[in-house]
Length: 285
Image (cartoon, rainbow, N blue to C red; front, side, top):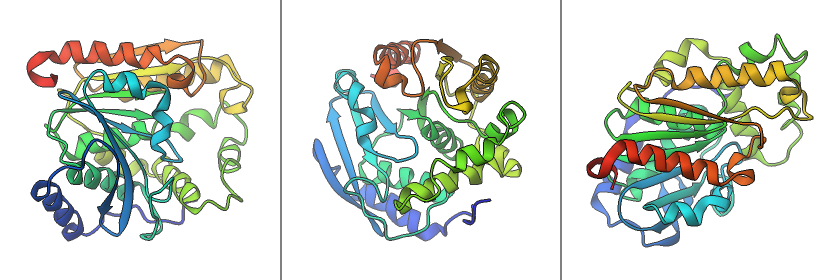
């Protein structure tokens, strides 16, 4: 069980960060180190114009997760990607992480970078939970969501009946690691899976926010992806994560595993184009 509390941080820190984002000029194009509360966070901004696209990585939190599609994303607008605290050149002094502090870090990065409202959030894996939580906390600021094979809040509830020892298999992926930020992010993820009483609070973004999800259906060697029944359960669970949206589109693929944007980079780009077409020129471009 996670050892980290999932409570909300005190308001003054975030309020100060939001003020910072509004009162200071945005960082220049390229890679910058932004002062975000107690941390220095590595942020890269590329491209230009509308829409703004904010990329949120899975566990491990590196901006380089999006390398295979970054150039093409930048051809479509202004792209912000960042490495969460403790990864790459980002510091990690405000320990330990939990899900709420990870979402608040995204809020602070967006504020400090001066990202205007009406942006698209693109999340991979754990990032899919983070972007849904952001949209829930800030209704009206997000134009649309694009999730790449996201995890889902009822992950263990769905998969434990199908995979004996599912919890232990997942914990084996990080226990014993000497990378503290990585371990803490996994614990934060378990904190979501084990907090059904918080799911409504965390993941109830407005139905007006369109949401496209890319889903891997390819059976893999790991038990958590090791059968057609497991992959079907994942498909159905990811469909539920977008069901509240008025525009909810699921795009399955058998050609890729979890890293769809690495193995089939054209798919997230096509999905983004579809989302932007739905949003129209006034809202997104």
